[in-house]
Image (cartoon, rainbow, N blue to C red; front, side):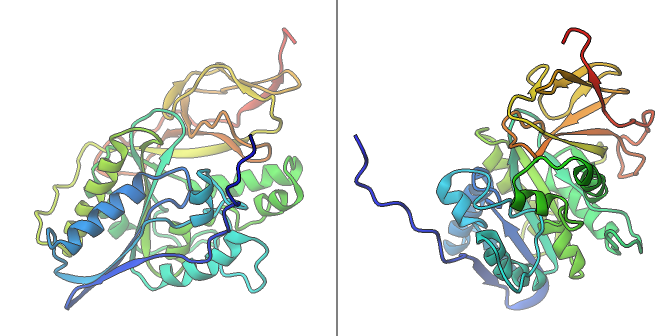
Length: 350
């Protein structure tokens, strides 16, 4: 029987909650549901807002802005994206073409008005929570940055053991591949081959003089993910001196990985060789996936699978590969042998 329920209207509002301490201090913004099916951050943010309103916590100084649902259209649809991925090509657009463009025209100035960002996400397959870290200090053209020490200190206090870096460099290489092999509709193709494709919330706030990290709190339906998000917010507030709360001791056992490659899904029939989970180890010459035309994707050397998405749309990220990073954050830093690009070989068995 057909439903008599009228179709939902697209949202017209971005809701944020701001708490001002009476003394000067850092300006922290916390985002939930940048992707509409990643709701652990929403749960954690609303929990904290209720506790602040009930004076179970009291802001000592600075400004705290909480955005429970950063992409209301994707959230309304209970899916990752509205018209497109908000966390790619994030910038102010004079002539917006879709919902996310219009949303970014409000979100970008909000991010630019803060010093620090904590962006709360989750991922498709089971796995351990981890933090996405920005670049080391540099004056390069891709992502010039001068606050690596402050960002690293924030990472050490959030709670998770695992840290992943190399996001924008990997995206730049992904863009180069897409320019040679576009596999999406016209709008998605245009965006995914844009040099700014890798710009998301953290990259944007860094471009405005701030710093920030993305915390992947666990699998989408993991009941512990909202608690990981909630504790991370409290830890960040304590670390920044914004709450009367004991400062969490920095972790000294961090495992730091470096993304080295992103592989897109080309066709709906592209499939994984097995149900990969984030940070599964992959060994040299092991089959990762099989293309629709029978080509086999093999790991050239030992490494890790990150963000495997068996339901990725053609032309979008299918999985990433990573290796141990040489970057020292007080944890595992020994480099593995360098990883060469995944090979697209024709399967011997057809």
